[in-house]
Image (cartoon, rainbow, N blue to C red; front, side):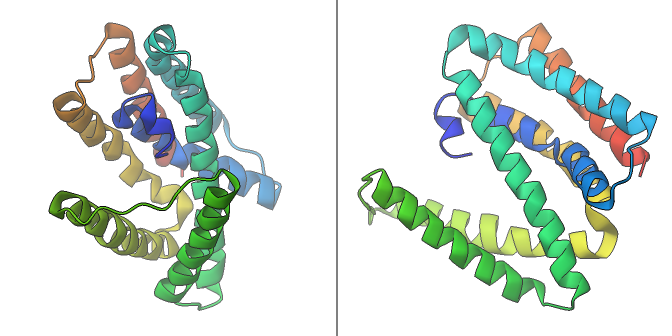
Length: 206
């Protein structure tokens, strides 16, 4: 998601990520070998149409927008896979904090290997804004947020937790509009509406 945000507004990435509820349903269907009902298929079609409309203006502006979209989709599928793994671990009475800690540790090792392979140097700034941002991202936005999210996931399931993803893109796009100078277009506005509608239909069907 960080790499994807280099070429498109982060709010748009949040819209793609909000398709979590839809992807969760299909991943569960594949694992359990069950068929999604018609309302879930309709929700998926509406959501995908919305994503397409949102990224059409971006593709006209930047050729790298499509690459960002692909990276974001891969990241969202990875996130959904983590949802299912977390639910399975909680069913085995493994504490969320413990599983979360090991998951993040493994993620750090993967990133270190990735950085070495691409020959990326490790850099850190000791300026206050950088350290404050790093602390916020690592503690509040990652450890605390995901612990709460995964705890809720274990209690109500991957389908119903999709309600949370409905409001995320709204706030993310507002932030992008204010701080990233994201310019709204009529087609993008319709696209966001379709994504939200698709999520609503999907969560109502659970």
